[in-house]
Image (tube, rainbow, N blue to C red):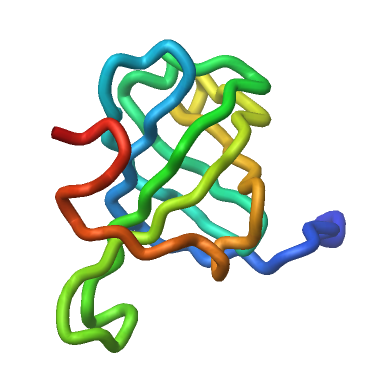
Length: 115
């Protein structure tokens, strides 16, 4: 028998391109979301070893136009804290500092840490 899910927000299993800029990083690192909720996300990222629990990060999700109903792709950016580094699944778990729906749109080339 499976234990009930006690998460505060429902998770959307959706892959989006993600850019992360964290403590001690010279530039943003690219990953892919595995699941996202209003409160956090699991991000699969090759450089998962670059992060530690409690690191502060800025995360930017690239959302395709067909997903958002917009006329073009958009990017939403907000703050997060690393709550778990997951070597087995080669990724990190983020807790957002404010709900995902409160993330701010940014022009595609203007992600913090992107050149």
